[in-house]
Length: 556
Ligand SMILES: Cc1ncc(C[n+]2csc(CCOP(=O)(O)OP(=O)(O)O)c2C)c(N)n1
Image 1 (cartoon, rainbow, N blue to C red):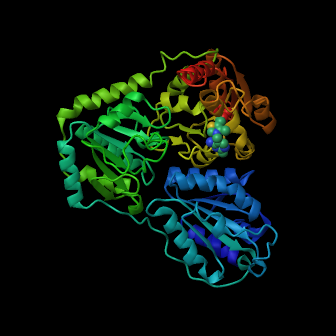
Image 2 (cartoon, rainbow, N blue to C red):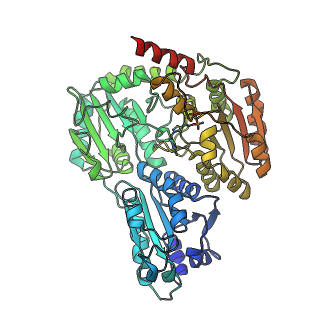
């Protein structure tokens, strides 16, 4: 039967886990999952399921698998498909589809997936012939993982799934790779040898633990300072003497100045999109800047010289590049060790929570600093979008590969589903989610999934009773005229208890320390409802201060 063939092919392609919300449109696939080696996480909403699959792809490098029903299920799943697209994450979304004979009648929950996902997915297909399941499933894996990884959508007509056939397996998928040529490495070596103020900026996907370590070893050997792009802190250990910080939102001004001053920028894996590029202002377009050499390394040839023209464009995956840097003879230079140290010192000063004081009894910088001491190095930190994440990005010392799940796409609601996926994948690791009061309730129902699978994650809901980021922008651009940003919140500790988890309120910095300890020791999914003064909108600004500043600017 088609549904069973599909599941067999997934097993054959190495799939270990499926995140789904069931639907009558793909009952035959669900039946195939009944007795199988594939673990299933059944979720409460397809957006959460798709985000969990995306989180799998981010941590593993293999496609996260999500299954949803047609029409409304597929629409909900778009939230995760968009993240996989913007974050370059391999993911495959299987969608139950109406029967082939009913097409184009606007049948119950009918959608044209090629049109709906056309702009967001790398490839959209519909399997019309049962015999083609092995071929098209194999292609889905190859498209999702090759070049710049991304989401693939596969629609499964209901009547095809119940047909019978005998089919041969496709070969298991393999990673299609691209590596730098020896002469390109020679050129890179020459450029680096001549650089006095070089800076590497890491981003994108197609990294793994070995590549991250190889690049770290290389950076140490050649005295190369290394920054990471927005929400890519897990690519490089923050404790490394070369680590210079993240080029993202609310970036250290001294790091931005260093990017502009660098005589060589080695951009590895990332696209330097809107957030890291500070709204496409950090580098001239098409560039490069006078006196600055740009080397761009990307696994997808289409991303090279797309926005930024580089003197050396290397079509290579970060994995292949890092491996090659470990073996190719690229000379070290002591002359730039002062430059490296200066950038490191700027990072250490910027990320020091000690001098930060904000209004209210709960000090977020100190809270994050406590996470630095209380959590193990391999803890996985998850978040969505909102100003609350700024504290984490700036003050948390990420431990390296596999310790961060955060959407470069800026999607609210991501942290909780990502934390559920992380704990499903790594039950022995500590998983902590930070969410704003707005962010949490976008996918707060997945707390039930954490309870269902006994996943003792800890969620810090940072409650400032508003969509704070937007309120901040309102005060900056339309001072004193807040609109549609106030929130009246539930009792999130009671919410946790009602779902079967552990819940507590935290109102002071001192109270946070034992509350976190109790949450971690509870053995249950836990929520710490952290009450933050609304004035504490960033580490350095208050809402009143921003409003006053905007009024003065308007008056001058
Ligand atoms: C899905 C989604 N919807 C809307 C936005 C726009 N947006 C960005 S931040 C934000 C407010 C976040 O509020 P909250 O989670 O409470 O965090 P805070 O900014 O208050 O710390 C909004 C609405 C978004 N990024 N993603």
